[in-house]
Image (cartoon, rainbow, N blue to C red; front, top):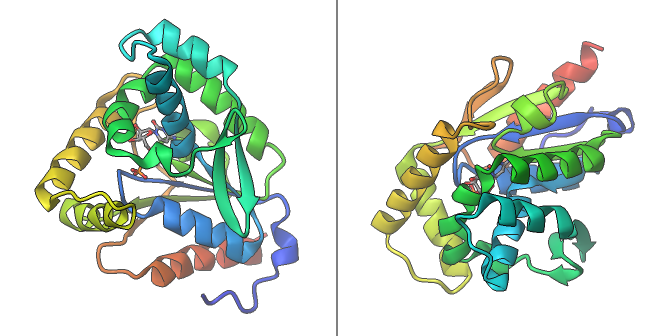
Length: 235
Ligand code: CDP
């Protein structure tokens, strides 16, 4: 990563927000960027996934918006750095792997569309990021959660490339899926996330769009580091 000549002591209160469609590389980019710049990483998708996991485990009817929102307000979701890795904690339990299963992925967009679930999560995200020094990623971090973020990025990639990446992620978890299955899953989720009434996925007017189809992780991180450098030099 080309972070030479970047004065990281100036980053104390910076807010970097990254949105984009499913499997566009937000998680890896945000995680690595936060670790390279010494910032706190907020994975907002992991929060909606945790609510979904909790509802499925407790047998809460996922079609009952009020019941799911009640649960969302009661659970404790936190992030913990374990051995340099960001882990998602649900009521004190490490659920980092459990929230990535196809079953959670299948239900998460429905649950994330509920207004009161969003209200509970966004309130928590603002608390986590309120003092700055954060990289947040998701669907509405540039538009709703941190509309005044210093750096706003919208990551995209073709659906085929995103499906290929997601298939590799699943393989690493020991879950076999077909490319076609991933394309369908991503299209369904993108459509649900972009057309919902509350906080739909959209590019903020002042976000910089980065198409990652032909970029490596390091290249896409470098693009964002360049934006940070520009921002600091214009202050
Ligand atoms: O990593 P991937 O693109 O699979 O998704 P994620 O970031 O883990 O988010 C999972 C789901 O949570 C998304 O498909 C959205 O339905 C929802 N989400 C949201 O509504 N708002 C956010 N800020 C983040 C995620």
